[in-house]
Image (tube, rainbow, N blue to C red):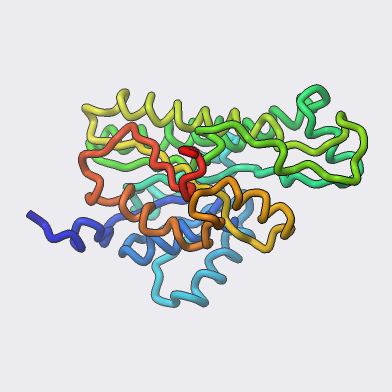
Length: 279
């Protein structure tokens, strides 16, 4: 039996992370690289991907990182990225579906009204669903399909605590906004996408169970990123641990879910929210 440390070792494996230039995307890349994986760092444009690689290299110069343009909403782009990697002799062993649009809740004119469900714009719905949910499906279809043919692979979908619970819209209320229909809210798309990713996880886990492909999800809670102090105070009152997550606190969980340390785990959603969803 391999020692616990060896089970986390990803040396010799290649991971691909979508939306890797964002706050958590870079953390996922760092976690996988730290465990020994070569990581394909993808963003919608090559310049963004290269910028993410450059920033990550500053902290870990020895990391084996590859910048690649990938538009997760376009099947042709997903296939082109897959073909480019194959042409370079690179096989993707781990797929992390992280790409998403996380609309920030603000009271800016025009933003607060359109976030309300009654006025939510259909084009915005379609765009956000395309990135966060359809993109995960297309990437799983391409890279997961190749894993299934080889008989081995791991897919990790990045969901959210709001894929388990509904948003508490009281968190976003602004005292200076007098009209209820203008109070900002967390948009419907975020919840639908994150719930959908958990559903996709369960579907693919059973679909490819006999092809050696494990599929799991992780549902992080809110990460502290210098948000408005009033918002942070309201949110932390809902969290038993009394604080938001630090930006690097999900790294070990990503390593666990993407490595042989979780070899008998599939179709599951690992909730890491400081206890918020159980209170």
